[in-house]
Every structure is written in structure tokens, then in C-alpha cells.
Image 1 (cartoon, rainbow, N blue to C red):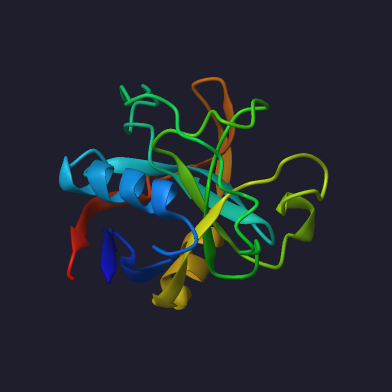
Image 2 (spheres, helix red, strand yellow):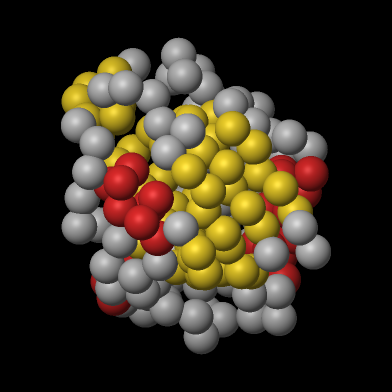
Length: 161
């Protein structure tokens, strides 16, 4: 069990270690290294997803480890409450950023439009916190859209298992 402590409350996450071993190990390593501490949710789009894991409050991007293999073909789906690796247009480009789906986003699944976005976990507690984050006012900041006007921060990520 993983606890993502935010300034809006805690989000408890279960990882899909068996189906997404590369993504889970990647996430656990970033968490153990303290990489996520004091990062922000930098992309919040109601009725779609909330994204975090790579930016400081001043919108500077944090250094990351090398990109990982995309595990979107693992059978897990981008459904409400699932966690997936964020990436660029390049399939195997995920590093530290991830998002939480606010609804079933079938078009993000493997083969939906391209290789897809690898789902590696699900919210098992604190979906109300996710919804509260999804409802914050957003705007443009640092060349990015859909950034919360008032910072929504990850205080820490604890590995409780």
C-alpha cells in the first residue's frame, strides 16, 4: 500500500505489481528517493484526469531517471481511479509523471489510438481527495495549461507495505 499525502488529504494506492512490474518498480524508486515530495499536481482537467510527479511549484521540471518501457499492453484499463504513467508521443518515454483517471478513459488503453498509457495501480482510498483536486480552479502558468491557480502539492509518498 502506498499513501500519497497531499495538501488536500491522503490518497491510498494499491499497485499492480504482477501486471506492471516495470512501472511499479519505477514508481516505488521515485517514492523511496523522495522525488515526489513537494511536487505539484500540474495538470488538472475535470472529467478526465489529474497529473503530477514532475514539477516543482515554480513550474521547473525535476530531473528524472531514464525512460521506461511502456506496459500498456498488460491488460489493465484506464478506468476511474486508476493510476497510469504519463508519457510523450513516444511510447517508451515515461519517467516520473503519472496521472489518476477521473473517469473511464478507454481511448488511453492499449490499441485505443496508439500503444496506450500503462496503468500500474488504483486508488483504494481517498477518491474524495482526488475529486477535490479535480475541482480546483486552473489557469495557465509557466507555458502550461490546466495548472491549479493555488498549488496542489504532494507532501510525501509513503510506502506502507
